[in-house]
Image: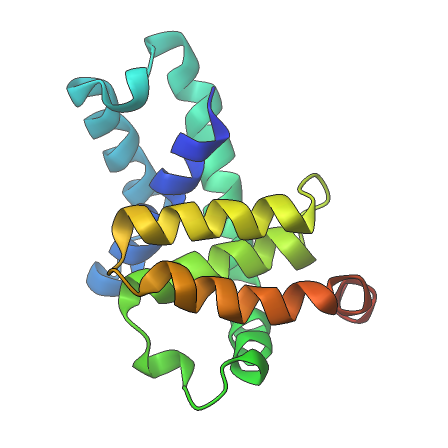
Length: 150
């Protein structure tokens, strides 16, 4: 199972949940099924269950901590409000913040690098720079934030 594909599916699931008010399980299931049908990222049938479990863990983690994550991101969005961001950038930042602060198995640098790659893939030409700027500031405080919020 590739974590990059899992993160891509998590961002798409979070987007679906926000846009269409779909439950996490339904959004993840639909996207995993589509990925398998279209063979995106070479999803193998035997990996589908592990992938779904990983993606659902990310999505539920972000959704559970969404208020704290949005408050946290708000402090690092100079001149911006979380509600004014593009939906894609907002989901990518939420996922990265979740992985940096609440997930135990992801180094902060990995979360930032993955978020930049996701923003280049899903966002606009400026998304990568924007995400890098926001998370670059946050990573400096990551250890302190983990202690405060966990």
